[in-house]
Image (cartoon, rainbow, N blue to C red; front, side, top):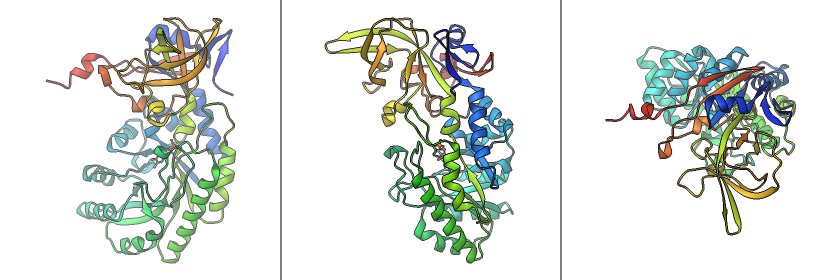
Length: 412
Ligand SMILES: *Cc1c(COP(=O)(O)O)cnc(C)c1O
């Protein structure tokens, strides 16, 4: 099923040996599979085929232009979380009516940009933001389509740092307050309330909270229609998780089976904003072993990639499989696989069983298509790693390695 398989023991992405990419580009390097992106986008699209729907790919998961263009070519639309992501969406060929704009702290400049472009919907976070959108739109003699981001107070059962649908989280408007806010907002000029939006968290692998959130928001949409608010869609956000460790997780068909009953007879278009589920399994981060250190009671395998290329393990305690790229035969050891940065939490894998590697060996950190390159930093003056897109037996560099000159060009 995966497009990362072993050919004669050597890890390959589709028809390209990862060792060949590492030899050409150096390490660290991110490698993405176009086939995985296509298959996973289509799986979600097909699963929801029975209901009018739009898939707005969450650019924040991975917004490299070539990735965004590939998704657009498949029929994806875009979910942008900042002015920068709106710019990227436009550069990738999305037109404004294909873009929804989400974000908990949209600035006046970002709202003005979205209104002037005429994006499909601005997912508004608060009553204050509705008033600001109204004022900006009136000043431009236009009307902005908005959806209200609802906080349903539902526990998504994911890591606390990536749950967003609890009343203690900063996102959205409390579900009990939305009807009154809507009543007041319907008197504001310059806005048209067109939908309701929720996003309860990321890496969700229990569908029950997503189903409950869908039911709650559809019920609210019906009430608002009763109040003569012309809701035409519900946007259920993203959040569908993947299996990082090989344990079974719901697939696109299970996801659709959980959500579709809630919207089926509602007359509402369904908008979804999948990110991770499409792109995470499409990526691997290649890295070279720089040292193998024995300390009393613990062995460290030090890589040339770390928190600057993949911060998820240190941010969320996230697990990623780490595998040797070439067939390994040395005896197994238990080790911590760490990065080169000056932080003890710069650890990519703890207590891993691995055929003892040697300096110079290549390792692949799997499922790093989402929230990896986009969260990279220049800490320790490290340059951003290049990105490669594999398609069949061919591969293309879609972002070159940053140089120290690129970084210093900004400085006096
Ligand atoms: C992050 C985010 C998404 C994408 O989440 P995934 O877990 O990657 O699917 C979608 N919508 C909103 C509003 C988000 O903040």
